[in-house]
Amino acid sequence: MGRIGPRRGVRPNARTGDTQPERVLTSDRCLVTRELEKPAQETKQMTVGVTSPAGAASREPLEWHSLPWENIQRNVRRLQARIVKATQEGRWGKVKALQRLLTHSFSGRALAVRRVTENQGKNTPGVDGEIWNTPARKMRAVEQLRQRGYQPQPLRRVYIPKSNGKRRPLGIPTMKAVCQILCKS
Image (tube, rainbow, N blue to C red):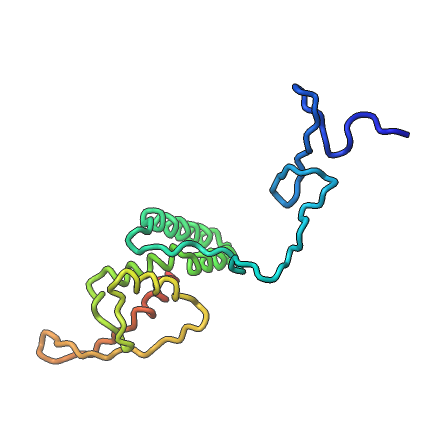
C-alpha cells in the first residue's frame, strides 16, 4: 500500500507547496532542522588530533577592576537573605545547601577577597608574609580560594602597647585564613 502525502519527516510549505525538512528535537532542549533519514553526525565523533581543548569551557579571565561589583554584592546579599529565611523556617537541609552555594560561588569568594584587601589592615601580612596588593594577586586569590586542601596556618604574634605602658599580644592571621572565614559568613 502506498503512502499518501509527503514522506515522514518532511512537511509541505503552506505558501509554496514544496517540502522542507522537519524540525526535530535532537537533545533535551535543542531544536535542529535536519532530514530524519540522514544521520546527525556523518564523521567520527571521537577523532585524534582535535585542536580544540578538552573539558568544560571556562570563563574568560577577568580583571579585578572590571568585575561587576554591584551584581556580586546583590548575589551575596540574596543568598544571605535566603539563608536567614530558611533558618527562621527551620529548613536545615536548605540552610546547608545555601551555605555551600555561597561558599563555593565566585561572588562569595570575590567579595571575601575584596573585604580583606580593601580595609585598614590590608598591608599587614600574616606568618606567610603574603599580601594581595595588586589586581593580579587578588584575582589569583579568588581562584585559589577553595575549601578542599585548606590547612590553616598559625597566627603571627605581635605585641602592641597598651595605655598603661605594658604590651599585649595580638595574633594576626594570614589573608587566606580571613577569606576562608568570610566566605562562610
